[in-house]
Length: 319
Ligand SMILES: [Zn+2]
Image 1 (cartoon, protein in one colour):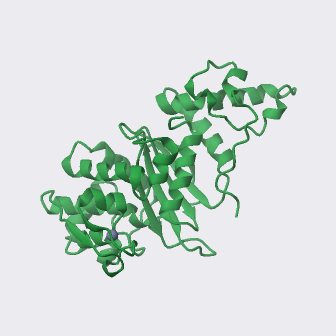
Image 2 (tube, rainbow, N blue to C red):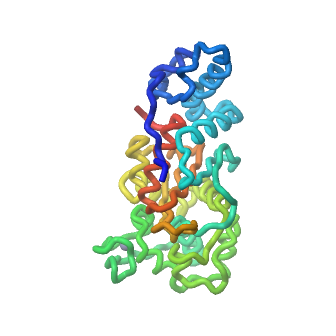
Image 3 (tube, rainbow, N blue to C red):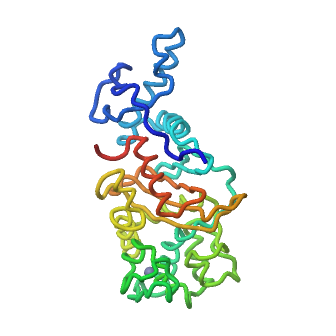
């Protein structure tokens, strides 16, 4: 298996200065460039043009003033630094436009616990926005955490991606009304005969295209003025800080992003133990980028490390 994250080659520690771009605080990011040794070669104008693009990228990630340029640069950086065929990703701007992608097919996928926020939205609509407190007893509650999460409400259940909590929400949900809620987020929803487990992200009877999942998350976050949505977003903020997606803030800084993880049965041939999914919205306060990743052969929590490194490579985060 190829490494998912290639180690930085600090050939140019200050590429922005070499490329004649005004220095800013992100110029110390240590951009990698395989072609750096060729600067000075007759064809070096092309390399310099590339450096200009890449050097401009961190600032663009923060200001997004030149979407087209950012999109080209982002695609180039991600292709260069994250070449593993085990990694699939979609990078969207806040409007839902695709900035960069590598996803072999746009075939519908079951992203495990990435479905949980949308189950919560459907549940909230059917219960006047009120959510229960649920006691997770771990293995006996069919949760992934053997010792259990104890008592938790909606926010903490999102943060910890507790199965027991969402199995409880899924039980007794009106499927037809849920389908109407999900349709407003551009989601087809699970098959009519899918079990309650599938509504909670267990099993694989709830499939949507990667783009549909990504855009549904954008809409959810854009609606965070609404009470239920704001609670889900709080859970995602804490997930990146201290929950299943904590590798995100570890890479990008405290309260940097909103995130959710999912672990699904592997859909590849040959089969791996699992496919890990992470969705990250950055920056947390007013997201301008959405990154959805799928990493073959790892859990959702492990895929989060890759997502954090990718955003870091795009200039996100503090240093
Ligand atoms: Zn639990």
